[in-house]
Image 1: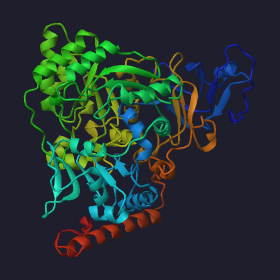
Image 2 (image 1 turned 180 degrees about the vertical axis):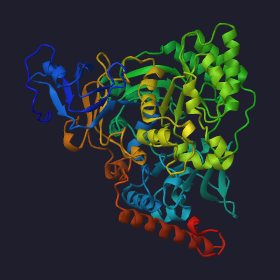
Image 3 (image 1 turned 90 degrees about the vertical axis):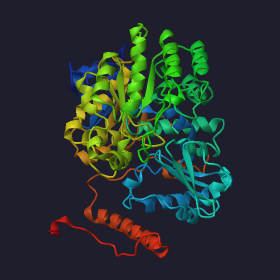
Image 4 (image 1 turned 60 degrees about the vertical axis):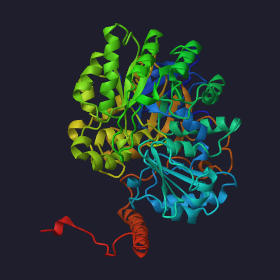
Length: 628
């Protein structure tokens, strides 16, 4: 099946026939000149016509794929402005995803089943994309539960930037003993006997979590390509057509980039990637940057894979941590080495992005930039931006705007909002980050997820957060004055992302001359109830005129992928993001699921009571309707 049978458009033998036509759609173009349309045509990867049936009819030839959108909403392809896609692809098929899982009971059942099929020597790893707050039980798994689910198979469960839970077999596989010292910025929790319990804490650095994960087996050879292709297909499932890879720890250049380079050469990428380079070794950052400047230039590559600059760290000493369960870290002086890095980049035409969670860090970085600006060296025509910026101040935003900077925000507080409120209070959380203040200053503000080790890669969870201000645990963190409307949120995930990679005018909008990147949605983003925004998926995703994802009525129109390898992969059995029903779920079924989770939580409470870990008091429920 190469196309859907569509009546009303008769193929014509033309010299300029489109490769793909999508019609009968409610198209949101993002183009103020023509904001709405019903049909679109793509040839040689580029949009040729945006209009109605009469406009696209002359472009339909014998070989044109014509797809009926069946009246569904069609939008520009989404662009995640901060995604660890390269690292995520290398590990995707090895990870058990709890993204979207509504109860810990279900998560543990998945883990138990996966442990039974995982061969000796391999680990079961749950790495990011979830929070205890999303579960009906509102808690983490215990070490005892992991030991019971997998007595002999190593299990590593990462929870945000805060902690990891390991079973007995994983402690042994990772080499943790009573004699293992705590690493700097991390804690190995120990029992009274001095033996590790299975809990690792970021205090506040997550290095202990990621370095432990790095001890697990990795994929080799063709399996890395297969894993990456399946991860890209999973991203296409949600309408993603582009991403900016923010690099990150344990992502070495050029070694860990070789898989996407090989896929790009073979024409097998289904997502456009603009990537950054991140110095990996403290004390060696200037040497790394110097070497890379001699090897490559920003924007090297093509429309599928291109270098976008340095970052998200330039020097390790300047990086703050994003563990909101811990106090904000205090940095020693780092400005001298940081200035060397920025000066080197500016003198060689390299832009950069900077991880900065706290305003205290941002102010110190800005002082370095302003010093270089006084010398005429900053920004020297280069793109630069701050990532995250949960506590950035109004004064800092004014300084960023004056220096021609931009912002990239992520929905980390979808998963860490409760922890942020507990530490800093609801007032600070209301402006974390101050998105409306950024936009009011005319700053380009791209949106992303920061997946995969903390937030989920599902962009609709992030769009839901932008619009509603709610966490995955349904806590309202940002009030109306710091939310954005649906069109603005979508523009942050399309046009703004394109601007951050210097591709404005080429993607992020649907008009002739732009890339043929689009998505036909399962629900109308502009009209569904707010809670259902997070449940939207794409039914048809197109990148450069290629159908890279297709389901429902369009199943079979996309490109075939090799099967998931290895066969025991969690992805082969569970898939990736665990989709849950929207508000259409029956009340009876909702009550049943909640009841199961509450029962499981009560069993956990009784277990703690028996061991003297919590007071022996009956469970009680408080109903404010009956309070005096």
